Length: 400
Ligand code: SF4
Ligand code: SF4
Image 1: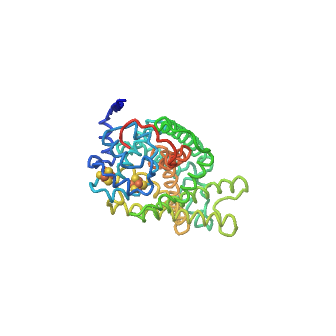
Image 2: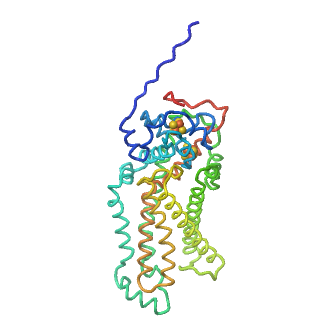
Image 3: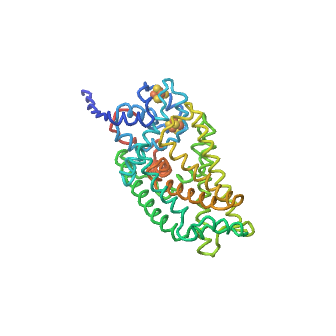
């Protein structure tokens, strides 16, 4: 019997996408000659359809859909072990990071906001909203806006609570609608991404969703994948400080709301109460951890090198705003204790403006890596990505 001739695979490269990737930090992509050293190096790559070699050739070919629906792009922890070993300096870690930035733009809702957040030329437009809010937060109407009055209150022996200056009603008026928007954007983004991943990989449902979600969260919480990376241990430390610091601040903020409305505990909280004291300490330790992690990360990025990866606008905006949130949060307390007059209130206004910036653009900035990373992990567990017995996902291109 005559052997069947394999049907040819039609490749339709998107050259504009290749150019976009290069502009987003993947300017080395064309250096790759497919030796697979990166794939062998990567501690996180599974045996079946390993990464990142296949993503490198997809990126060279401009296979946009293949890349943007590839869950493996988000299973990468950006440790750059592969980039340090690549004999051609093709920096696969940077290429995957550039693909992720494009994926955020594709799935983010509303789409136009994703485009604005990705481009430096729109930074001033994006910053204008939190800036105006910062002014509103720092300049309350009426006599309470009189900084001299605040000064007198302070020197009169009593620190005027921030609520005297900026009511909770104003804050809720801003942050409650913002929270609703964020939830809608995150849910829409994840739904879009999940559908795209499932269609492209031809995945079959194999494991319970609940168990997969729990396993994915556990991986993220314990940083067990990132810990496997070797070339840049400092990055693990910085990431862990940022992550746990942020989680600690989230818990503290939730507890403040519960304390205010369930128990009537007015702010500021002191150390003389076991529960309030505990959360005050947790908030401060978390703020310190977040700020220290950001400083470490900034220093690393300034040092540069293959193990650090390329510095892009997408990375810097997120990192600096996050670090600014941590730093101003600490300064709010410090200035309240050691300075007089209006300074603590101004710092508080700046802090809230930075928090607004961080949260409002969360689904469209690098911060969104948290949700897509978890979604890809859950997907890989539900559909047995790491199960050698499972059939290979359908492919639309020859590279594997
Ligand atoms: S990125 Fe580098 S290590 Fe990976 S296949 Fe290409 S040339 Fe080889
Ligand atoms: S950056 Fe790290 S996790 Fe990502 S592909 Fe390279 S070696 Fe693997």
